[in-house]
Image (cartoon, rainbow over all chains, first blue to last red; front, side, top):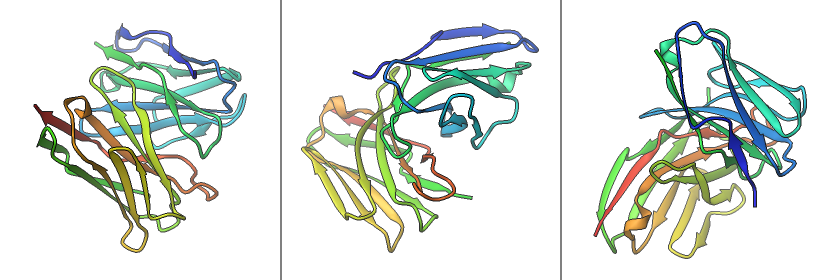
Length: 112
Length: 114
């Protein structure tokens, strides 16, 4: 059974802080994704990675960066958190680029 | 850019009735159309998907239809049950093209009243 875990379910940070969100998958998936979920806006892709050390911008990369040093781990970094980055962040992974995406439980981030 | 329009945004049905959610897309090269279900407080999960070489796919009470000419696809749930209450997301992708990632619709909140 595929397992995608995220480091925190809830996180509260202050404006200007550097924030790290971690995602780990245990199924040797090549592809990993970070989404942001806001009410009425659906799921929006921030960054994705098809391989170790590879990263590609999604639809809303501004204010975010990512790191993939190991195949199983994909990190989302907010260099200087702002209140408009308060949201639910979902990580996902897939075996094939064309395949089912398995989501993590999400991290609800609040920036005050 | 690519866009997926999903309607309705909310849908309320009586238990046992059918529910239909429709999505339209703009990229004629799109070839993969999954549907995800997200129950309250839980992660999205794939419930059914269809590729562009077929027009319909069924799995028990759920079915998806695809009209490539009109560029729309729909999720059909028959004999709805309270446990079908959730937010449903459609998505599309052009796998093999320059943009191979899923583009999600904004979601439909389905409420099934007992």
